[in-house]
Amino acid sequence: MAYEITLLTTMSISVLFALSLNFITGFCGQISLGHAAFMGVGAYTAAIMMKASVSLLVAIPVAAVFAGALGLLVGFASLRVRHDFLAITTMGVVFLFVGVVRQQEFLGGEVGISGIQRSELGRTGFLLLCISLAALFAGFSLLVKRSWLGFVFDSIADNEDVSRVIGIDVAKYKLFAFVVGTAAAGVAGALYAQHFRYVGPDSFGFVESISVLAMVVVGGIGSVWGVMFAAAVLSVLPLLIQFVDDYKILVYSALLFSMMRFAPDGLAGIVNRSMNRIKGRSS
Amino acid sequence: MTPVLEVKDVTVRFGGVIAVDKASVSIEAGELIGFVGPNGAGKTTLMRVITGIVKPQQGSVTLEGKDLTGLSINQRVRAGLALAQQIVQPLRGMTVLNNVALACGTAKTANPFKAIKSFDKRAERATALALLTRVGLQDVADNEPSKLPLGYLKRLEVARALALKPRLLLLDEPLAGLNQSEASSLADLIKTLNHDGLSILLIEHNLREVMRVCPKVYVQDLGKSLAFGEAKKIMSRPDVIAAYLGKG
Image (cartoon, rainbow over all chains, first blue to last red; front, side, top):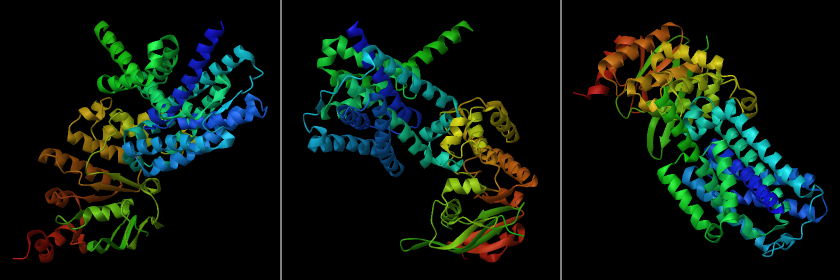
């Protein structure tokens, strides 16, 4: 049973993490190649707090605030640069994060922070917390998609200049997306720290940023259900299949490439198209 | 009475080149003014000054007495300016109806916190359909813009601009790229909109249509205001003819 709990916990944390990137990249159209940095900020914040015997339930909101604050800063950068330049900038953020963390003694330097105490919730309680938070953010994402916020995000992702011409304050919306998305990544980070009871600089680098992007792209950029499914499957694949674990970056990159090349709208797009075809045939 | 739009002594320099030189133009409520001039006259630059994309070195732009200096394009749109662009830019990921409905919802899209609390799109969709009917696009409301020809997309630009309930409509070469019958039917639509009370500034190269629908024209040449007044009188002036055809 312990193994299943570990698998499900890993899955839920990944789902939350992937949905947080989906909010920025999928909904608002702002590419980020450095999303793991925000998870890292959340993880380190929570790790330090839990080492100081602060409860996980207090550490989670603080982790969200710290990650969201960094997200706001990076969001400001997104107002100046777009598309590939934004991709390079966000990539810079993750390298900077890892570089800075490695040098800080109070963050454990190269070794990281280990021996984080287990939370008072117990394993099952913690799993339920992870599932609830992932479900909560998924519900929030679905709500946003239906609201006028989702409508405006669609237009910004489509064409920023046109959005301005119809009176939309693009900057406000982009900053909103960055803060919400990165704060949620911070929450995922806090959960990660509790789950593995260890955080290290290598856990939140470029490879993790690409892995989470692969989850979003494979699921279907912007699709809540697609991203949830892809994140759930891709997060446990390395735990189930040794080959995937050994060649994780190779497998994820190959998936990312094939999806971009053959089905840019991801699994959600493939499912939608098939459904339409079936409907078309039956009508 | 305060003019709807007043451009006063606007000067724009790009390096050593003076693109607009102390240009002034004003539009009273309910007017339809044709803004003409040969290529390189600085029409587009002046238009960009009005929309806030280009910052002038000198001069001011006011909308119904409100100084627009320092406002971004989206703030100007909310102040009552609407723009239909020369190069059509529909939102390609959504239907024609949603393109217009989004513009109808300016009250709901003022900021993310308002937008996240609003869900109902029925009223905006109904208004959008009425606007599409007005510009003759009701039959393609559910289509994606990418599948439509240029003439339709030009009308979509106009419908989207109308959705903003503007005090002044700026039309940047709406007839460019259209054939004669499409151009003349769109020009008729512009005339009707003006008859219904909308103030319009029409930048256009198609002089025939401008002369047909615009009672007044503003002529700019080499960045300077050349003439402003009744269309027929102005266009028969020797200096205006010389600006177009060169001096004999």
